Length: 315
Image (cartoon, rainbow, N blue to C red; front, side, top):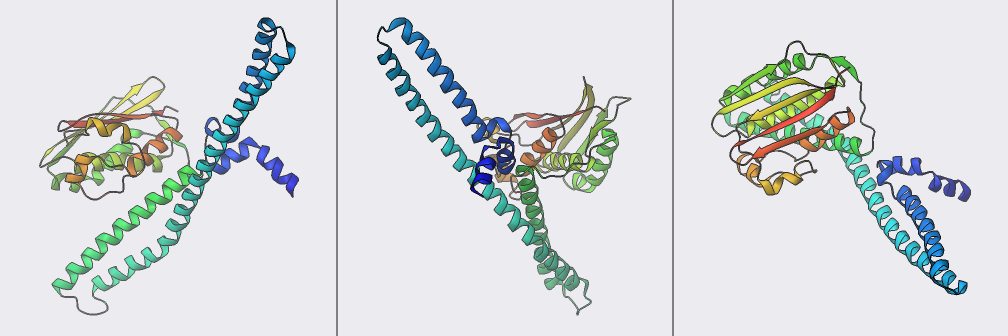
């Protein structure tokens, strides 16, 4: 058993999968690279020492001391990184387990509220209906949060399923805009679509891409004060299609922009206008786009608006 454990520890790819990290961020891989650097440093030091120092014992002592110092520093750094990676893995595992366990009671709660609101168990007066409506809205928000947490957990563990297929991004965009018609009208926001013609198909998971686009359009509409406009543009960009969404909303403060794609982050001015939200949407969106072989970014000016964009590979 001990031998198997040692072999498992030496399997760099298995350890990286365990931590859900790319190989260049994996502690074991970093240790391997640093070990190579230490050996190269020792050889170079020995070669230089024999050229400038007459006593070979002194040269050997210098090389040994330098190697020990570098090894101790490397070991300490790698152990610290390993501890952080393990803590991050346990955190993701915990979030995944908790999110999964919360889905069933939340579904039961939602079903019970809908049953009570239907009046099949007795007459519901106007005041009771208002309270049931509040319960329903909050249970829906909790359901969305649990779904986001579960998605984040799967992303970090590398287990988020992708079913890549060819589809027209313009058609998916039109369907999403139609789904947001009533929210846009209620918010006095006009949504415009500009698409080059003809456009090739993209290769990605349409369900995942839809989640990204819904998040971007929902943010664009909700963060516009009073009234405004959202412009969506789809155009070829080399071997990719570029999707761009521009709004006339509150924008993002410059000091907050570098944190925008981090988990649970919400900019300071957004909190003044929109209290709902988990701060996970943009993290999930960027992770999905990158897993799809594209890139995602933005430009924003506070009180002027924001432009978010992403690319997807053409089939």
